[in-house]
Figure (tube, rainbow, N blue to C red):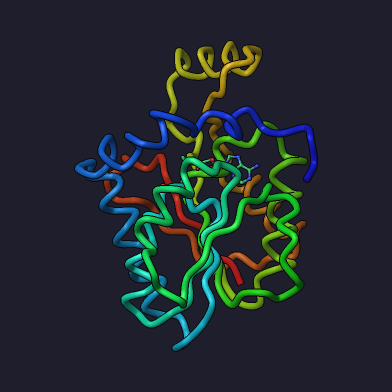
Length: 211
Ligand SMILES: C[S@@+](CC[C@H](N)C(=O)[O-])C[C@H]1O[C@@H](n2cnc3c(N)ncnc32)[C@H](O)[C@@H]1O
């Protein structure tokens, strides 16, 4: 595993992991994300393998297993995966692995589909994003969904705050230029099939459907 980790690699531990679901479950934006994930899973071939990276507490576990798909939840945080494991219970068609998203250790084409929610915003620079997208391409045979925060319409004050935060060592979420992100996807070997806005995000969160 590479040692130069992104700052958010150590953020989701202890109480942050324990309280993660409770703090998000009633948010309209979370529900809209879940609806989009469900729609994507509805389009997956029967019996396919789905990699959820980063799985976090396993928000997609039941959505995947209810559709008779196989689930692999991968994350760098053992504490987040501990909650994910509780959701999996004794299901034999699901498992978790502790990984850095840039080098998962999975074989080429290990899975058919991949979902990556609320992750790109924590990656510090374009090189890191490209490494992750390349690893996604290597392990995923068919399609993926990835969401990003877009920088459209952000106020000057938010841009200044973003700039200041980018010089601090605390983990901070990053905004993407949509076209720039599409380019990074292409550089990593993906074709952008569709870009879909989270309807509860006021245009700030977009899903990329990648083939
Ligand atoms: C905001 S959470 C999102 C979790 C889940 N996808 C969701 O939508 O609830 C970000 C997750 O990224 C994980 N993470 C951070 N850096 C990582 C890395 N380099 N490799 C794998 N997982 C990482 C964290 O442990 C955390 O669980």
